[in-house]
Length: 301
Image (cartoon, rainbow, N blue to C red; front, side, top):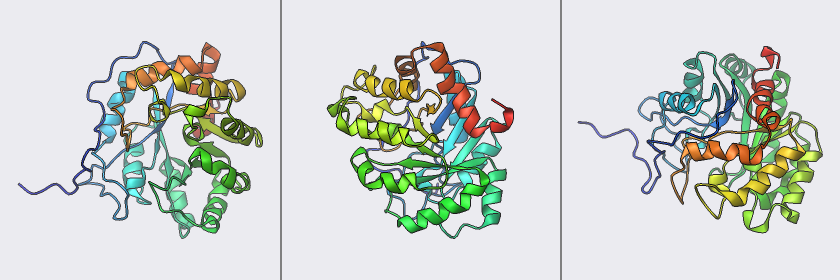
């Protein structure tokens, strides 16, 4: 028997094999607007320059989870372990029966023809990652070139950064010529509290433009308390949802890359939703109306 093409990192936490059935029932048409596919590595090789080697997390596994949790659609975000090779992403979208869209990673030399191919394949945005442990920092001029190329397509830019870096990056972000979607509430420092100056800065950043969206995601990464309730993250999510009800999204982050503390139970993550979006109207906007408007605008929501 031949050796596997890739061996996941020692200590890697494999995604939960038996998540609990959530008590919260998502509204019809709900979208998991932040998730990933990993490989399989023997079919879609991981990037040579990756910062980590994960376990495989296939489209079939993702779609089974979607159905189990009671969701209708997925927005699949290109994982950094695949670099700018978007084949696994496009393959998952192609096999989703129209129930998935994607966020890709591209480089400054991407052609108009390649962008058109990605758009036809269901991509509606690109991701700029500023988390140093995950990627090598790209020059701002390169990111500006990419932003200018994708703007005519009506795409948006997903930005992932550490909270302490927002002060330095805010002017650059605000100058980008496309809507912005912030990953994981800007990764706040939960120890400082939702009324801290650090989180006030994030709220002000969101308020500065009316086309900045926020993913109210990843309490499992942010919490100091931990599962099952992640109660210390609730005030952050609730503040964002209340301030920007028409510009918030939610997702599982499956299969949870680079988790160190525990293996998240997606049922518990779904049950976090009504703690931050407390009314049926907020829940519908968070899970249905907003992601449909951003990723499936042709359906007229």
